[in-house]
Image (tube, rainbow, N blue to C red; front, side):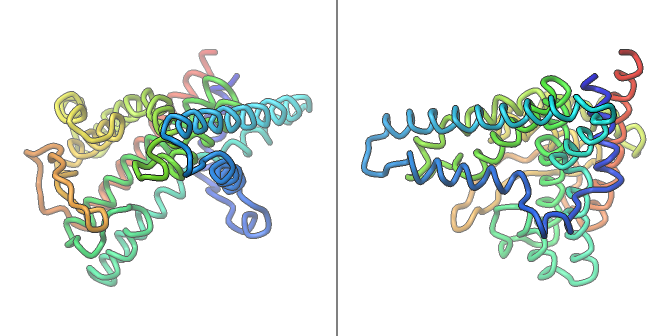
Amino acid sequence: MNVFFVALSLIADALIGDPKPLWQKLPHPVVLFGKLIDWLDRTFNREDRNEDYRRQAGILALVILLAVSLTIGAVIQAVLLFFPFGWILLALLASIFIAQRSLYEHVKAVQDALETGGIEAGRKAVSQIVGRDPESLDEAGVSRAAIESCAENFSDGVVAPAFWFALLGLPGLIAYKAINTADSMIGYRTPRYQAFGWASAKLDDLVNWPAARVSALFVAVAAIFTGGSTAKCLEACMRDAPNHRSPNAGWPESAFAAALDITLAGPRSYGAKPTSDPFINMSGRHDVNAADIGRALTLLRAACAVQIGLYLLLAVLW
């Protein structure tokens, strides 16, 4: 029955999105996980200990986080499914952890800023969704960053939560979000988190591995409905994704780049630190602009529809 719940959750998120008035009164579940991770960091990440101790402490912290998230998910799911129409509440609750609508809105804000306020407004808007230095970006750089964020977050903010919800129910979904939150907070290669956040970063790569490949397939199929080529998407994924700095992000980014016939990635700066990443879909158009962000959003909606259609089909077959 999980695939049926996933389909309902995806539809609910697409129609309703994140209920912001609710989170103005109550803490978002992800915020609560953030507070737990912060407590684990302050409790176990002892800077006066050696690297081996801090790596083991990071593993212990991750085990605690997983135990808490899996238990919470299992208890809530059991309670809700005990009632006749509890499955509706289960689907609505799960939709909180899926980011279709919010992803669309955040990326659309960058397009609107570029078109109405120019490059400065675009830089300010894109700084809300990417970590690179916005002052070093021209219009093509801002547009490219927004589309890359759209592609990557389609994988880890939409496809991955749905995948783990379908596979393991609400416990799997909540555990995935806990892992993803831990990676975003402590999975950095900095002196403080190089050892302590190692386990979280590695586990995040592992749990996102299947969704990254599946998301590329969804985009490749969606390309048919947006003027792109499924074959070119798959070819770009096989050619360019292995060269990406991330073991996962290159797959949806390659698919988006080929579907839109544009070039993504390439050299950029994070703070004062420049990188020399290779371009994705090098044969595509380099002068990416705000209109291309709009095309990427259309592709995103089509890919989300493909995913919903798949889960509905699986629900009917089961």
